[in-house]
Image 1 (cartoon, rainbow, N blue to C red):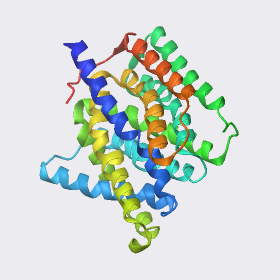
Image 2 (image 1 turned 30 degrees about the horizontal axis):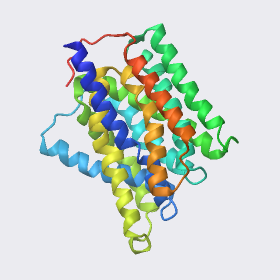
Image 3 (image 1 turned 30 degrees about the vertical axis):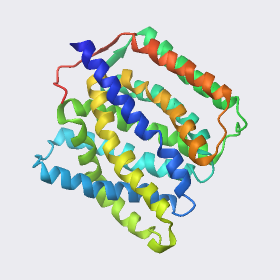
Length: 297
């Protein structure tokens, strides 16, 4: 039964990763038409409106004080920190380059999970996680963009924010429910995202329809519904284990950037991608002990 639950968690996590894989390419396409601060704060504000409606429609009770503190951490990490920092980064780096830098996110999330989720990955799991991150880092260092830029610094800060948000959100999802976690996090953050979103909002007629469609994708999928799948997957399969699927997000993003942005996709990329898939598969078989007294929802 536990094994079946872990596999379900992995499947849901993969679907979440697939949804997130389009985030950087979509951001890259719309950042010429919108201020990155509007993209970051605006997508959170639009998602918060939908989230508030869902909570009201389902008559969800207010979280308790401990859960509220955890939701603040989720809000700072994945509602404010990651969207704003990644949007700023997309002004100066390619989506494909940014995707590879974000390849450090699975290892960072696993590290945070040790402290907030009380998970105890085995030595074999850590070796596979470190190996997967090393392969991704080697991939970017072997490319043409090797100089550290402001965009890279923003992405590294975004990695830290997302790691905290994912680990805390995945842990909280075991008791609060994955969809409620992101909905409450968005509502909690809305007083701080609304004013900047309005301030930096462009004139509607000055932005192409395609850019607005991309913005809606970021708001409704990357910021909201993708987290329904992701948080549920983290809760069912374990934060440390499911987080390793983010290694595949790099190659999903590269493929999307190739299709829609005409960014190069070489044989080398495919080989590294296959290598990462193999590492994730091996890592899945490594034991991860966790305190799972709370019933996953």
